Picture 1 (spheres, rainbow over the protein chains, first blue to last red):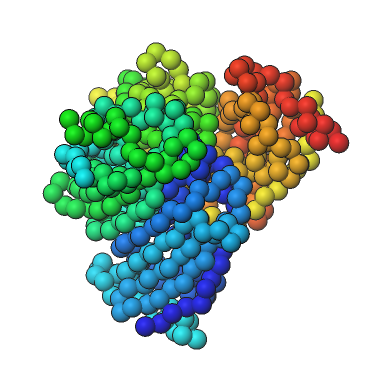
Picture 2: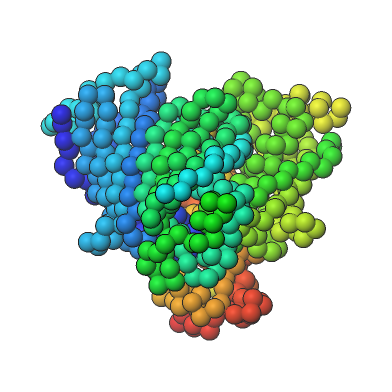
Length: 132
Length: 132
Length: 132
Length: 132
């Protein structure tokens, strides 16, 4: 089992992400989590685009999300991400903060697929960069 | 504890719901679940709009989603929803099908808030309609 | 110049399409227009998926949208679409109604691209079906 | 007639904004334009939230968008915005760039509504800040 450091990404809530209560809509949190995972890979230097262009895929298999507090227009949001690799699963533990307040938590499980669409081991390049 | 019958809602995957792999993006499933919950209330005859206009709110507190298979453009999708009420929580057990195939499952927990934003008992009208 | 009959598609506004004023967000109208164009092709019997899988593309080149009235949760919306083909452009004249009220109008110009990404004549199959 | 300076806002294309061709979906450009207008107001120091909480509204009346080139995952996007005020209309001339390439242009017309929902003069605070 390999565990990463915490990676942080920060951005503001945009107007079109709000629902009719003026809160960030629940589906948008899934976008935030995905955005943070992609940022995680970029910061780590892992070549996600090349990995996908080689015919592989990373797909979300499971999400457990707890919505703690609403987020509002212009809020400065921070997503903290830790990645643990367990055999063929990438477990992303993700927490969304506004300052020190927890807005939401997500445990998001990614599986990696080879060019035939079958589950496969995580890319060696990713494992090396995490360990390095 | 009160449990509803199964409510079904059916629709087609729309082009703008796809990601760059040609699959329905994971966040869109949250939209589908929400759409099915709203349809559930409409079919039951529960007046959600009046409930909200009276100052109350229903907010999603937790989601557990398992993504089983990808869904594609034009797929005819069916969401089946069962509602169980446990004290102050509405538990929506939701399954997304394409014909007999399970595409995704979601256990979505809603809490009801009074006009001051505090958790409160589910609306009596809803409980009566479920029991009736 | 070839002009189609009016094609109609009908659906309800969904909860997650609203902005913080409780109106359908302006970007969602672009989704509605796209959904109606895809439905147009399906009703006409034109094989859009095969066309794209053969390496061609249809891309939106220009949109002129007038937003007349807000649309709200649960509104039953009808999009009427007329297609005119002018040389290499597909001109979709699209109007969004709620009953007899005009909610928005859109003039959306599509160009067709060949497998090398260059503008090309509209697919013969489409022209034939329109003329037929 | 009052005309503003150019205001610039920069951000990266996010994964969930792509369509099945791997291009930013057309509706997302409407989000980008809206995001840039909100950023424009924030940078100018205009209190949009207070204006809305006082019962007023700003609504999009018309959009003319030209889509020039596709935008892709991770592209660094820059939206440049100029605001001209003509009587009761706010005309936002907006251009989306990737480096020096024009990705899309938008002419977006906003009208201001008073607490009764009737068109009204643009807020004095906004006019003063533009002139100042």
